[in-house]
Length: 194
Image 1 (cartoon, helix red, strand yellow):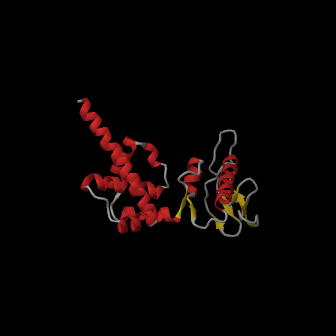
Image 2: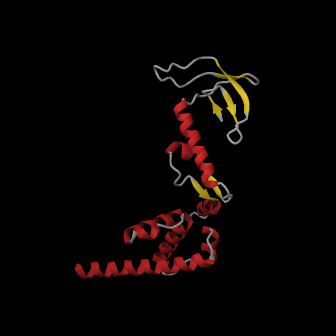
Image 3: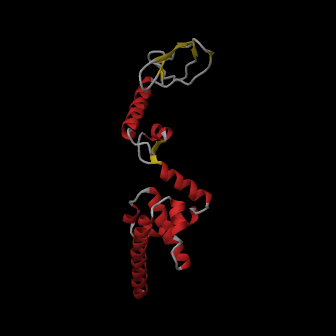
């Protein structure tokens, strides 16, 4: 990590100082200027964007918290750019299985069906969307296909694309049936009112 306050490049894990930075131009703290020319004593001159010390400490805290949350969980991946941008960990720490499912959805062009299913589920009962990301998308896809074709997509397709287990597929089928029963009941009620 670049420690501009002390003018050092420091290992974020062990704290070992790897390099010293030399500032060619001091920042004007009164005007809030944040760009500083910095050169490395060993590697020659190069231009870097300076991170103000308050922001640096904030980002370092987020970085350490991400590492703490994922310690001992090698199946999780961290999107540090998202963490630093939003300051939140939601949708920034995801499992590799979910990332694989997202890539599969993109590769099979299922986003249209998934988004249609999400809209249907949200209009019927949004509580059904409180699942893991890949289960939520699998449920949405299953509902959309069922509404279009009258049948659920094959178990093999859903399990492989959305990276879920056979047991999860069976549970999602039951949830989809409940959702569709609520949907049909609502449609009948609306038809009677008209």
